[in-house]
Length: 445
Image (cartoon, rainbow, N blue to C red; front, side):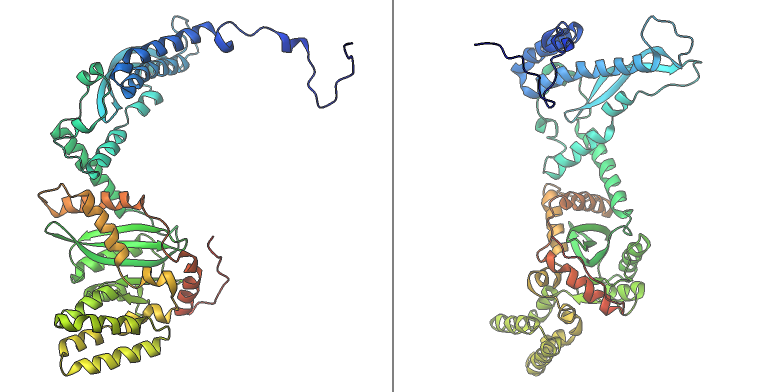
């Protein structure tokens, strides 16, 4: 068949002679020196495979780490053995250091570099990255929250090879405990210093809980996008005016903005209700937790009467018209007043605030999220699960540290709340509640 000599189309590349030049020496066009180093790393990897994949990866990783630090030294101080009058830094030997590796601290030799006039140490970014203590702290916190005790911490780590293990440090009970205390203290500070002014919060849940013998009050926010955010925790009860006022005031000072309306969902603590009113004004909408109200009412009843009263309570709360709902609750209280005066008083106490979500027009799935403080209790339950191995709570500070670490860990498990697509309607209702003009709310996808 004759060879075609047709002119190539414009969209076809020209076969210039440069495209036919031979590749540089080495496999895949890589320089020989680089190929040799890769071969060496692969040989080391194969040598340690008998101790496990992580052990083999660690062996290679240490060599690569040395090469990266050496490369940075050459970049900062210039090639070894070549005098350069314009250099800004010079090699200055090496010294001992440590890096974080597989939940351990491992001793290494790190190169040193000083400024050309010898006046100051020049830090190496590569070593700083490898030696970050927070990498170890994160691993310790994650393992401790997963239920691993300080005594068994080392046994819970993956094998990194006998040679590395013999030199490793930071896995003893006391060392792990000290690092855990430091890390959880940092998480408590992080939680209590979070700026709240950058997000639009529609709902704040406030409720008390118990960690060992210590009582805590936690705050959980719900954003306009439907995500839950832990906001704070203090030691005390919802009946302690100083404690809850301090917590609510701190939320405001960190930027929590109620000017466009915000709903507080609280338990039955009178001090907590007074704190919300004092800090954010008497007009702020407050929803009393219906689950707490149910317990307050039924504890005044004999067992045989509780289910009937519960059904009547829930039927009244399910009435979308708040006036009708209130009429049903008041009728129930009148019917109980003679035989069960304690239950009748519990129904009447805070009755209007059990119907706040009705007045705001909250229905459907979102109603189940906002009618109680269950979201806070669910978060605290995750914290308790993390702390199941704690046998003795030494102090309130310890309880706060564990709670903060657990709350921040729980945040990673949160999904958008049930009924999040109805949040724009809630936002509009909250604006009406504070007398602001309405605006078009963007639907949530």
